[in-house]
Length: 145
Image (cartoon, rainbow, N blue to C red):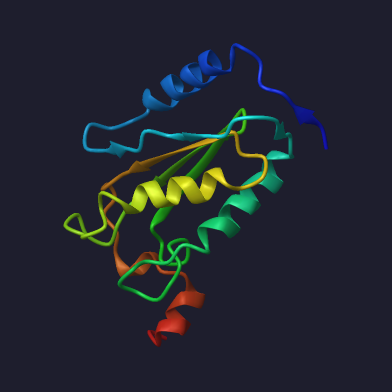
């Protein structure tokens, strides 16, 4: 693995990347401010990085349902560009009591994955979450099958 030191233009690069992500943002979406790592970031294969991110997401549990957010179907998309990760996620309901804090926790969890330079979470409501999005493994765990 190759270690990459941040150059003075890192903030400019991050800004450009985030601007590209924001171009795809819809009007009803909420965005976390972003968590960025400082210091050297290890370059890793994007597929390996995505697998690590998914594993990290599986360590975050919904506070009301004993299932991780990935298997619960709350994660709609994970995009990586220049080691900056953008996650589209939803909640089980718009009035969820953790709506203002949960995305930040997810963002920090993703940012801690080795090889991630930064993370941003977009809280989206379209399409709305339904129990149909729960993975088969989680359905078994919850006794729904």
